[in-house]
Image (cartoon, rainbow, N blue to C red; front, side, top):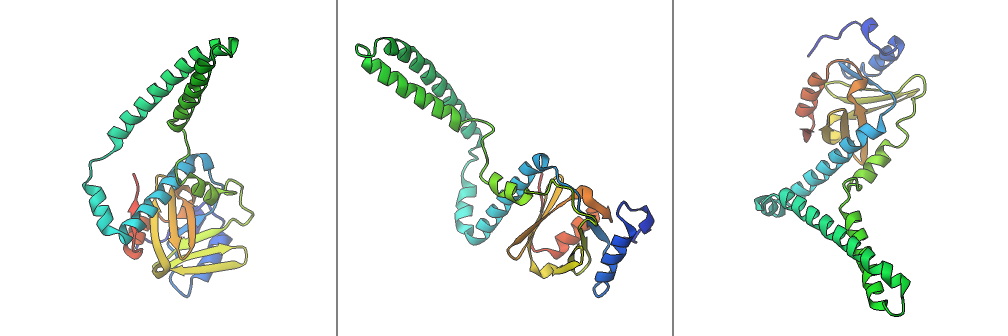
Length: 236
């Protein structure tokens, strides 16, 4: 385990670190310490959404291994899905164009051109709905859950800022006068993204930013969690 560097060189306040060290004295000194800051929600949202989606698939694979073995044998649908989306968009554009051509004269002579008017209106609706379904920026399945998890985290934390530390035995939360220790045996999984670390234990989820690590190095923490947590995955 890496030697602890002098506290004076760290960004966090010395009295906050001493407080956390004292709380963990019954376990071991915490070599990894996060001091919570505000979160960049727009940047982190897609990463957290992907992590939650990957966790969901992981749990599904554990519960239904036979089904997933069959799914994994199927050819990848990504290329076919892209072609299908492109065909749908082209068809939708054609429907919109045809609908406009039929609707305009129908509106001018609705009694005489009722059938073209109805057909044109239907084509416009069909085309618009097709384009809406294939839009690139539509919300992904786990975006809503990720947004709920990140809600309010863009605010600057109160002083002193909450602290999360990791030792050989587990994780410790410290916020004002409240502390909580979570042993690694309580962890379900941990998911590392480009900028975050998502931890699942019990019925709870904790999200940490890598940039908030003010003591220890993340590669060492990653190795520790991979050893201690049943399911730990680095995501590309």
